[in-house]
Length: 316
Ligand code: 2P0
Image (cartoon, rainbow, N blue to C red; front, side):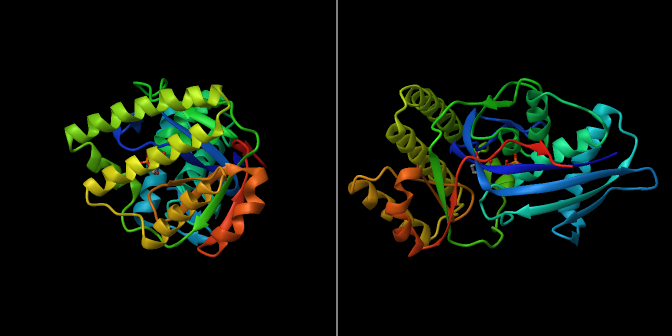
């Protein structure tokens, strides 16, 4: 009745922003990501007959309030789906700054979905696990897999899942930490704004679907520069719509890193910037170029060099 799972965070090249179903976390569009080796969550779920409610510890702190509510509501869904009669003790450790736009909910809910099912002896396929993780947090659907993952938007619970996607084995991501404090507005709340404006929502869907077609073709052609260029443009487009909704995650320091990236590209280095719901900038590049560019980024931010992370797995 106990299992510990580990899952890594993922960074999107094609972003998930906005939902067509809030309860099921069905996204407005499909998305594409890369799982990182350095940032992850380890979660233990222990079902106990004597508990009268779930108990949650994150990084050794006893959690109450909205964070607890989100987790216990999610576990209740799992209990209902798989007829699990017990409450659980949940202990989670994050090797990633929480809520700072480094996608900690992706690793958190992927690890939780896996631990919560295996602890009761339920062995799901990766596809089923991906849909289940998505119910906790959309981006978690993609953290079930190592390396690149493509999340099919789908139209209901079982059709909205991620699957592995073939890509560059020598991919590297420089995570440039500008600020690791909790962000002021969660992506969960922020992305609801987009769906309130029908015109912007439709433009976003149309543009994203075009980007998806283009990036898939660039992957087939093994064309890293086009993949990077599309990823950077799509991140910029997402931040444009965020700003339209009055949400500004990027800071002067973020823009300095983006400007440096453009400058380094001018010097012939394949570096591309992507940003999520926070000021930190992730640089997409290839292993062989890290030595040439890392020094410049380290002058502006604390840099973590990441490679391909593994998919979610049971460790105990
Ligand atoms: C992404 N983000 O594709 C995008 C880019 C943030 C910016 O997925 O409400 O925490 O839990 O489904 O997964 C963050 O959204 O949102 C996210 P919920 P989630 O990585």
